[in-house]
Amino acid sequence: MTRSTAQPMSTAAPPPLALLLAEMGVLRDWVRARVAPAVEARPALGQGEPVLTLPGFLAGDTSMRQMRANLNASGFRAKRWKQGANLGARADTISRLHNRVRHAADREGRPVHLVGWSLGGLFAREYAKHHPDNVASVITMGSPFSGSLRANNAWRLYQLVAGHDVEAPPVPFHPAPKPAVPTFALWSARDGVVAPACAMGSDADRDGAIEVDCTHIGFAYAPQAIDAVIACVKQAEAMRGA
Image (cartoon, helix red, strand yellow):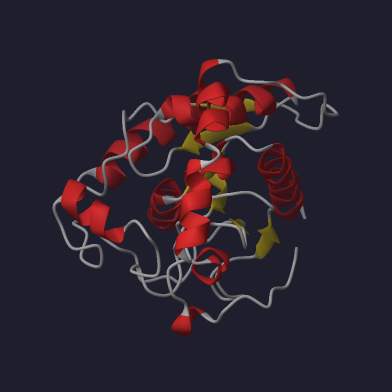
């Protein structure tokens, strides 16, 4: 897990315009990953560990299709969140997510690893605080779980779509700084949406952080992000078995 010289969370500002514009340059790759996911040759490191993917803001299950295809090919059991497009927090977000995660955990006979991209990662962390028995680990990817929720380039659009202040969502928040399960944060210095420091967090917020060389959109499909997720799942399994 890497250490970082990223800007402190207390002073973090949204990524610069140049990085945000660079996100537009990978949209074609993201669309291709959704329509015709590419599966890379990797060692079969998984042993059937269930992994549930939670998409980012305005995205749905197809957005992480390439992620799931590669996890399945590597021996894991990747699952959709089946909640439609992620349009922001609702009063019943945790309860709806509980129905899905509990069903997956019951069917698999074991806790589920939650992999949340951006806003999906915030949901994953909060759910795991309320229902840790169903969760094997939480892996966030470019999720602004630390510092200001305005240290990103999406909060204004979020408020417009979700219909509430970004800092006052209608979700019952748990006071714990992190879930009581292995928790990892993937972050990128190339992120054009979320300030890297807010996605990386501090030692009190998570068990480890991995820097990934991709854009914010790239977390959903980039090979390096998939490799990092696999590494986190395997480390979480080792931590749980220790």
